Image 1 (cartoon, rainbow, N blue to C red):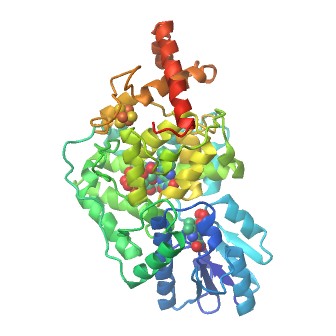
Image 2 (cartoon, rainbow, N blue to C red):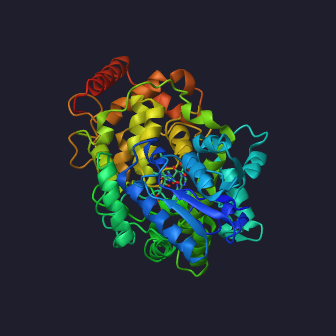
Image 3 (cartoon, rainbow, N blue to C red):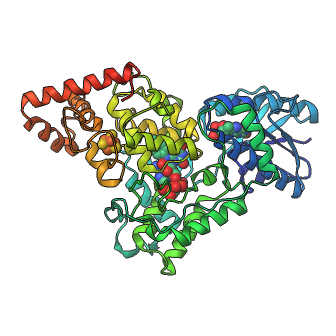
Length: 508
Ligand code: FAD
Ligand code: DLZ
Ligand code: SF4
């Protein structure tokens, strides 16, 4: 009796557990473009196009390898509109009575599969370095779940950048070398780009007609849509940009959207690249003397450290994690996040490139859009849904801990030991945004004062009870308390006035 083998849009890996478990001679692969997945948030058109194009090409590859693949395109008249609906339709069509699935990366879909009216075997998604059990064991009994200690476990487990039991060059973490401000010139022309072929063009036409009203530019579309292309994009990054990745990891430039970043997160997340293989390639470049340790270690840490850790938290904490709102923030997400006019150049530029590329790098997400949302007290669930919609690499298992936890402190400090907030000074140090901004970053109050300068103190002041005893925030409160009372009152009044204008929909 044949079984159905479900392959989701972010499970495009030849070694997927469900495919390994199945028999190509008798089992049937089901892949489906469905409205339920395109509509749970209004995904950026480039994200939908990437997923559909990569799905169609992966289906063709599986067919070439001898699999019977039942693939539903979004506009097929028979399309049931949901993953479970499609499984049931294919079960009826083929007589299959069971489904093999690899665990989805979102509680919503796990729940749907668990309750599907057909026997469904959910296998672990082992395209990660740590299993759920390993993460639970690591977390068990710890007061604080700090990424750094988990990361060291992962270094030991993989042997990446290790010299026996010790880290190469004697240190686990070279982050203090990785905070250089924006360079005058960037000697990297950005990620490798690919010309759309016939399959991609067909998908682009479909996405244009169905999702043209979603936030984001569909064209130009240049992303890799196969494993082979994604590998070429990775090699291009490793040889051309990785040596400087560490140095400028936190820098931001208004007219350079990628600096020395890899722009491979979407490829890894949908299964075109294997995270361990990516790190091995980086470690080899280091061993060959082509890449300094601060770059190699910084990069490997993002993947076997942060990426794995985020997944661990998402599955450890369960479905309610995304509803966290520890700071009680209730403000609606302002229109400027959807491209509404703003005089704040840093935000305008970050949103503009998000619209154009479905991409912004980590510091733009954390210290520009995320920082602003946190300082302004925006409802973290709306912030979460925004990040889930607008970025190419956004899948809940990785997006939610980054947004709810790291960026918005909405989990009460499980991930971040202190909130990632800053005044305009940090943005000015790390970027060229402030030059040419309507506001003046050096002005603290009054005409033209940078809103980050006002909101920063407003945030600290309104959350004093929660943060006053946080050892890492003592300096901030001491600085605030040293200001005379009149000045403090002015800052708070001007921040309140700013927030009022924001709420009224005025251009800020
Ligand atoms: P690089 O800067 O070149 O880093 C290399 C790789 O490391 C990335 O490709 C990615 O796989 C991994 N990585 C780096 N930082 C993280 C991190 N914090 N968590 C997980 N992996 C990381 N990343 C996603 O993959 N999906 C998301 O939905 C997502 N949402 C985010 C939301 C917020 C609010 C923040 C602050 C960060 C988010 N990140 C997310 C993490 C990070 O911003 C992206 O992984 C990174 O910008 C991707 O670009 P890159 O490939 O050029 O990465
Ligand atoms: C994100 C996405 C989109 C837009 N569309 C599809 C789709 O049509 N079919 C599919 O199988 N998967 C899609 N995905 C990815 C899923 O939403 C993803 O598998 C879950 O969110 C779990 O990570
Ligand atoms: Fe952003 Fe303030 Fe700098 Fe303007 S002055 S770019 S608002 S940090």
